[in-house]
Image (cartoon, rainbow, N blue to C red):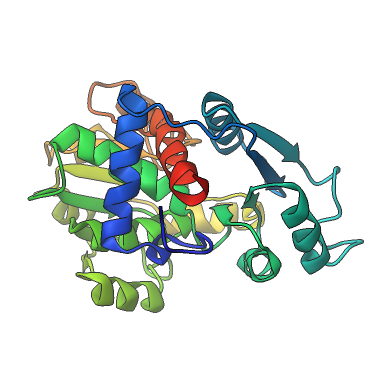
Length: 298
């Protein structure tokens, strides 16, 4: 069982905690572990649209013998009519764990502050720890562990990227980051990675960044809520696309958290090639989150 109250970002976990969750996830995935969360309820608060987060958490809780309740923007007030702290206190009286997918990271922190049950970050504008757990599980499966694995992030220094930076530091994965000027990983995240293990190497050229990579990871350039910056970002990210030309510079397998904007950050032919771990990543959202839920509430 994890010695944490909530999972706000991946670095709430220690390196040993990450190993514990991933080992549990692997055992649940293989059927070696048959732990059930019978009569346990997961409350799921969604402010942002979702495919993988909702389906993986809901399916996972069902497979564990529990129940999940979806609460979308139209179902509860999410701070507009009732204070978030009141919603959090009330949910704590009903459910055993809460997962939230919100825009504002501060809203997550307020919910966690007033909750008496574990709160899991299903995504905010600053962090996506559940995706990172799935990413690490995918790398572990593909390479038999993390020793000598070289990873590269090419693209936006966004929430997924920032959590991945911290996750790599916790797992001991050597990471290189390549982002356009003005879209770098935050200094706070780089400093935190150095505290946890090693800060990533930062380079300017995508071809230089991928040269020795085993894993090449990218994500959308225009995230939900940034539609008004679309043209600006597309111009800024020119040259950072993961395409067959870039793949000719490396033997790396490609990762993407989805949804992908085909033709922007990644091309259709890359996603349809045998160079991707993307679909394993998507599946592993289910298994990693099952491992996390069991370790949080068993």
